Length: 406
Image 1 (cartoon, rainbow, N blue to C red):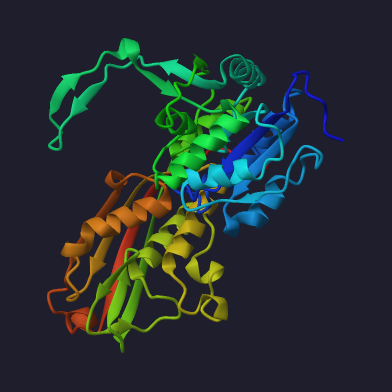
Image 2: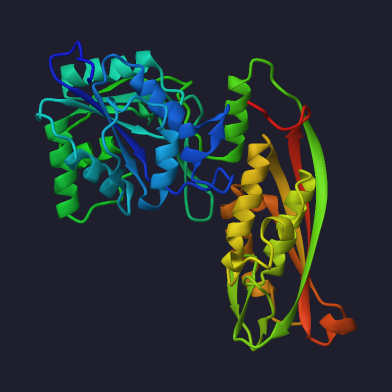
């Protein structure tokens, strides 16, 4: 049975895990990436399940991720977990759905927490609950230690803000259930679903949220570097990293069609390519470079053309998988560089879109993606416009002691 809370009202934790967060790389939403041998979401759920103050945990999950959620929550006691709630199109919609699913009095305390903050402590949970009971709301806040500037559209500094009155905020954010549920309903009715945290929703509804001291260790995992830092934090003996460099190459002949895929971008063209998947030579070459860097076969091993599952498949799925394999080895991608060789179509107008798409799938920044285009000076099959090719080079770092066997 659900443990009784020592507080006079129920305390329910809402874990927001419906995002698609791929900036961290690994090919999976970040809440399901492995961290120290466990999915991030498992660690977050365990933290709240360990608190004697929390009587129930409700997790909002993307409808496509129910299998991932089931695996991540399998070790948690079923008495503490409510049924997962399908998330909405925005964070606000997701939280509103989770709040609507809670069967508790308006006086109950609800703690709304980001799934990607697995280092939340029992002390922070207790502080959120006690502050919410006292003030009706509780927002963990940290002092701003860097000087903060306001800039214009051209990147020029227009003013310096007084950091003494500024704070960055974290989760869990605590509220009386009735108040935060009413605030979300009011925002939804007004068509406002652009708030990035629940304190902003309450503030917009006319209530000034109360703050308490946050915890600098309660970090939010966002990029691949965050995962590397978190792994080192969990490892009793930090591992050194060794740089590896690998290349990949792919080529496809032109065939009937009205477009080609390059770097994850659809480009109109008077020809298509002959391929089992979408024939994206740039992403195929990049996948082979990633597989080569970790000694894990090639794209044909993982996605054989004889398998009908991959007929017409989008190649960004292949890239996401390759990045996931790198992440599973504890690796971090430092840089990728692509050369696309073709007479047509023109690559230049699409260069920035390709770099952005590759960076998004790989969980790296665009300045870590190099992309060039050249022709073969009308020599060979490429010069005769019979096909196109791509060459990729990847630089990444892997732990020296090899795969993580935890």
